[in-house]
Image (cartoon, rainbow, N blue to C red; front, side):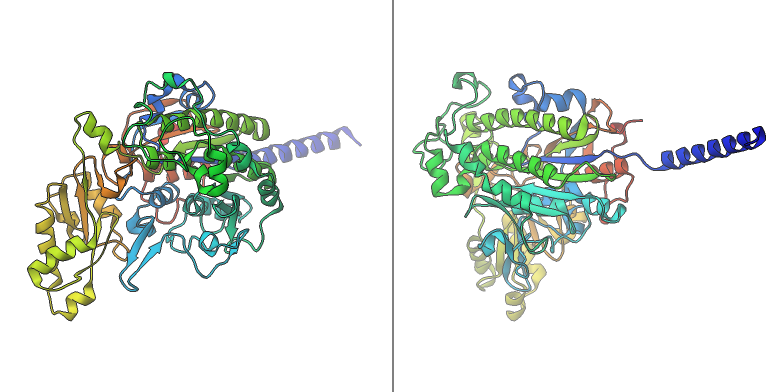
Length: 547
């Protein structure tokens, strides 16, 4: 070969190599895996309430290595589980994405609708139709997980896991690789025929290990000496509920193994429900080879035991503190697993919450804080209206702090629905427990102050929500919550949530700028260079994204 030809070949190969490198570099860089951690009922202040007792590799690792947004709020009401998970992953609100509550009342059928129930599908992994007949059919918008699947021509794998069906199904979207939830009748993780006809081998293998039995076999005692739980109320406070066969809400819960054997949902209110969830998350990574392909995969995890424990014991209980201290250790172990199996700084994780939780009314009253209980049932409201119109059953349903008028009864009795509605508004706005009662169709023009006005509008789905939204005074809870607590309100204890990003593509730092829950999905979309979810109303939080 002549010198001239050698030079020409060298030039050609160099140009080819440069062009290939250019084409390669023109492809957007993405992490191997995105992990969503949504801690159920986690108030923002829990990041710091127990800070001194957290280890260095769980919550503190997120805070120290990630980017923490300290002023993130839920921008709709009601603040319930299904709505929160849907909003995080769609960047949208109930008015658009359609998930108006954990359940809602359907005026056309006169029946309650659970957010993920789908009688057209069959249970897989269980014989219990109520447990297994679920799908995302009621979800009207796409999720960021859907958009990742679409952007990669369905090569990206998406898996959702939770103790709760709704908290696995809604984040995973319409067409995931799989969504799995806990079956109280068997102690196994199950799915439905919407996703597959049989459980994958890795799920069957996981179930066969009977990990819940191992987790509960020694009962539940405090991780630290109980005298060190100075951030919480004394054990056996009168506003705490009971776990299993326990006669008092006190440590140790020595009968937990027997209680679990008798009724498997008892594990949900203990820290071991979170441990179990993270273990199946690890099994999903291995079983589906998540994070090992050429495209980004997504693992959506809901840690639900914080919610169950909060409902049962209240946020100021030693039980809830112990759940968080143990979750901190579990997160440290999970991050170590990700480091070893995906690669440190090769994955992106975010941690947030679907809602917070109010302090128990008894706790508030003991410390001279304003609080109380309200009654909420259609019998009471119907009696009020019968005195005015001499007609029974003008109210069809009261749920989610919303009143549904019975349009048929109103029409059959030739009443004016606006007059009926206004009469009930007048009655409610004189109630000592009520801050505002608002006509949901007219909320945008009402005299209710911001941000309440916008949150009512965002939460109003005209096909699924009620006619009147009732806003109760701060820390007033429904009468059924005399033990433990609940959530659903607009107040900071329910709406102020943590949000931390960490890992690939994420800066280190923190911010006190105001953001909304709806900003999470577009931030992830921007990170991944994919289209925003179809109903998105949020904006990317650009300050968290690396250069």
